Image 1: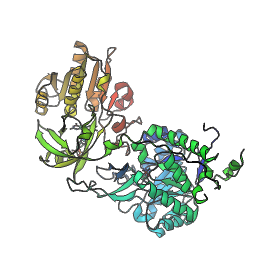
Image 2: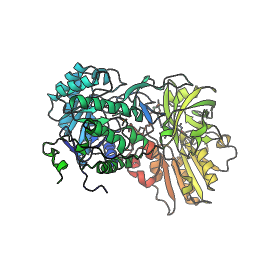
Image 3: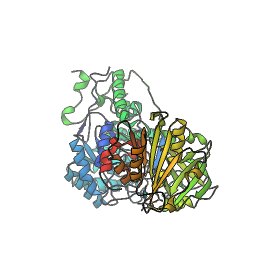
Image 4: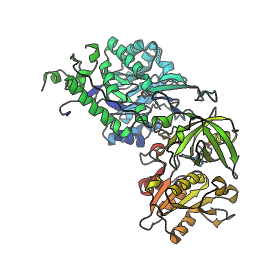
Length: 307
Length: 297
Ligand SMILES: Cc1cc2nc3c(=O)[nH]c(=O)nc-3n(C[C@H](O)[C@H](O)[C@H](O)COP(=O)(O)OP(=O)(O)OC[C@H]3O[C@@H](n4cnc5c(N)ncnc54)[C@H](O)[C@@H]3O)c2cc1C
Ligand SMILES: Cc1cc2nc3c(=O)[nH]c(=O)nc-3n(C[C@H](O)[C@H](O)[C@H](O)COP(=O)(O)O)c2cc1C
Ligand code: FES
């Protein structure tokens, strides 16, 4: 029995009834997508990364599975642009679920413009995507330089009032970038994005993606994501949303122990039964907390650093 | 309230961190069944031939035949043409070690596919989608299949599977003009099926739309199931036909499928939150009415 265990958690001032959200890029570009994510049972909806203008993204193939329960994607930040933000936020409000708008850009002003539209639309928070690995000029091109991270986060945080989360990817500088993001005014960090990778078909001898590079997600990156969360938490103790290969209560629990206040799920929504997944994780986490003798998920956050 | 609970600083909207000793370990895990369908499986082109004006048939042999197990009619594969495109195509036929697709040459992807010679390699992601469950059809009954244009592509495999389930099929195939037609028996020589063709320009067969011919057949014969495949207008008009009791009605839809695995959302069937690539492409008429009635193609 899991009566009496409280999974309520807090990220960047948002109260979440449990720690499981979707990660950006799993649906999240239309109101219909939001409705579907809501039915998956997430505690907050995170939108697809929105840029100022519409982006058609890369040509298919855009996603393939890899041995080892990983996915490789090269979606190329396809999104409807800022005009797509208000309908998404409206739908989330209608469903009474917190909504975080993921914001992308190729320059500081674009981040400010998109984040401002998110705020005007009534979003609860924005997540700055400083880490997409497969779209030139966006994401990791910005996020791997701590000074750029500071500049973008600072500019957005001083323009809008709603909380700003900074989403960082794997880079040698990740702890430094994390520090800079917090210094720039980020209320929480989302760690990590997909990991830049290449897949080659050995019969046609061609890279699978026209764009060559893709972002690896799912089980293969889980230990890497846990490492990044662990290192950043150890160094800076910020609020962290752990992302990367969370696919069951155990991988979620690992993220929490490493220092995550909440987790996001992308790949597992695709590879597993998406309508059961969140429920199973939530129930699993409750059982786990009971086994640990804890009454509240907050008690488990970063526990490994103290154990 | 317990001590640990009080230590959590809920009032300021933050979790404070509390030291606690670990005293237990637990483990449960589950594995994914869909995963194998989402891998890109290499396949070699065996033949690639023109069937009629615009319609082609390609036969491929996957390096590993595992992806040919348990393929349902009306399921589809994402067919990757290296350096070119990846497009959704319905299974047209299966043999022990090959899979065929019938396709209409439209744009970049299908043009590149039609240029492939035997010995070329492609990648197959699938089978994808829900497909049609032939076991739901009453044995010894009759099915009416209505196909519009390239909607004929999955029909051979559908007929084959229905036959195995002891269901006989009549096919209505509607096209714009007779140049698009080919002889279905060429594709499946031992097929026991009645094929009624309809052309919009009255160049062959019934003069008119496939949906009109289908309604005439529905009035004349008794069917237990109707399966319509093709452009939205055909499906929409058939779905709005007042049907006699006892007739099950399914439609196989098309949408823009970019990923095929429920991630990108390009195939959402507005205004519903259904995704064609995972929830479809086959739906009961009644379950997808809102989308069909929304208009557009
Ligand atoms: C689940 C599913 C199963 C399918 N099965 C088959 C099949 O078995 N055989 C087959 O021939 N096609 C099938 N299609 C449609 C097929 O995928 C498209 O024709 C193909 O993707 C077109 O690719 P392209 O690069 O050649 O054309 P594009 O360059 O993408 O498009 C060229 C032109 O064709 C138009 N077009 C594209 N797709 C369609 C479409 N579906 N209907 C009408 N016009 C279109 C575009 O608007 C454009 O004007 C299926 C689609 C889905 C979603
Ligand atoms: C198909 C797909 C699209 C994605 N699109 C985005 C995006 O638009 N913005 C973003 O910040 N992250 C994007 N990501 C990365 C995820 O949000 C997440 O960080 C990553 O996939 C790791 O989590 P997972 O292992 O649970 O998938 C995408 C991932 C996938 C698989
Ligand atoms: S095609 Fe991407 S979700 Fe269906």
